Length: 179
Image (cartoon, rainbow, N blue to C red; front, side, top):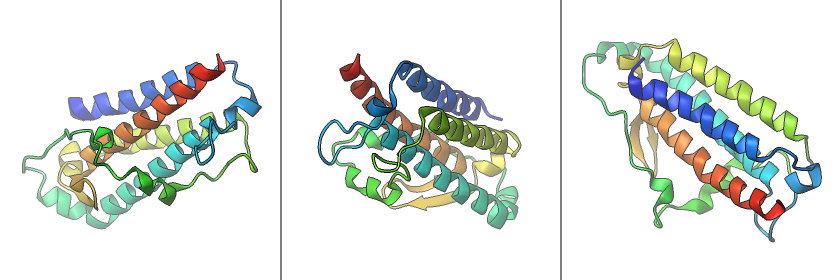
């Protein structure tokens, strides 16, 4: 494990737990309350984060299984572990969130505990995956994203964490309105 990968995994968990801590005392009606038309509720935001992260996790696993041999051949090449947070750029196409529409919503709600459990279980799987792999191979396997370009599997993890934090900030804003 590189220091960057360890930091990313720790950040993934800590920012999530900070968001969960902010939700203490929130009622189910508050969890699923939409602050305005065409805006997601806190529950929908959490489920959207889960949906994007799980789809990325499956893509990363697929890339490892399909091309791990290629990454092992290239393991001695240098690679990046950092990337700019393009989610904060005014030019970022935020409208693409519809591709990861929440499975749960105001008409089909679940408990906060269910959302927390799913996210924590996913994060545990992501951590296990990254901790069990050769970091030099992870750094030399690439996925393509239309906005970010070619990203190795370490940078892909960082992008997912940037995405989550963007939406956890939305959660903090909505929670503040309830308290």
